[in-house]
Length: 68
Image (cartoon, rainbow, N blue to C red; front, side, top):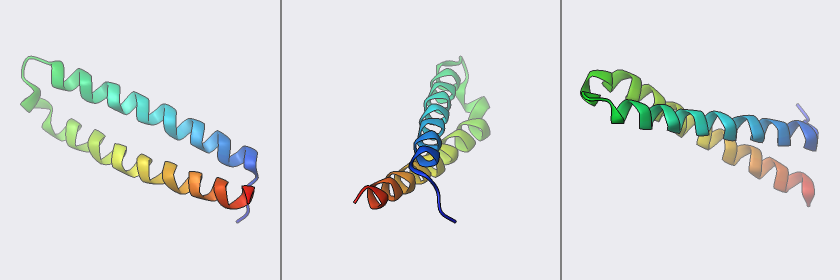
């Protein structure tokens, strides 16, 4: 499937926004009195960060390939 530059830029913007929110979630849970209680939520958020980071890098790669 072919994506326009605008599609890719919007996808990157959304990925970056989601990453920012996930990082805030982690900070919030880690600041709680008993962060161990939120272990599964922290694990999930960290895995999502890894996945969205990968997705963002792939979008950036695609953007570079269409710009050249």
